[in-house]
Length: 155
Image (cartoon, rainbow, N blue to C red; front, side):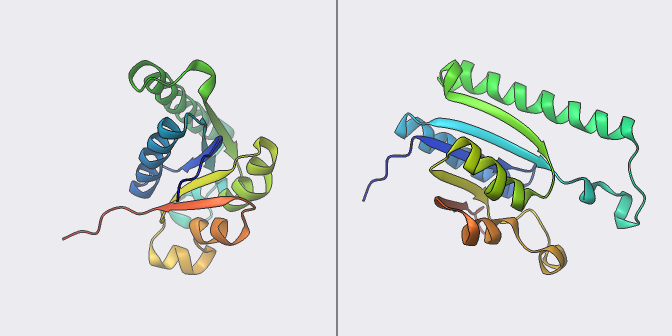
């Protein structure tokens, strides 16, 4: 069975699962000649110092935003220069908020993606129990196909 996707959304978060999701999205987008949206969602609640409730100030948030913007723009440039993506075929997006909600309730409906690719998990067991897995939420709530990219098991 073959699926033809036109608009692929990949959510990245800096984790190994996110890297695997990006690799899968690049491969599928190339095969399908699909548009690729690369989304990074910064959850400000997770940026507290050590979970101690110490919030970041505006300057620190500004720096985090610019570091992530630079990373995304460099990624896009690399895909165009080295992976033969066309200028209008790949876009990068940076949003703030709860990744689960941004992906499923904001981004996908706005951009009409027909496939969402996410990594298996970027959280440890305790974090998944407390706030839930982004991947499991996206799988349940998305109104399009979802691919969960898993990293190879350690031997």
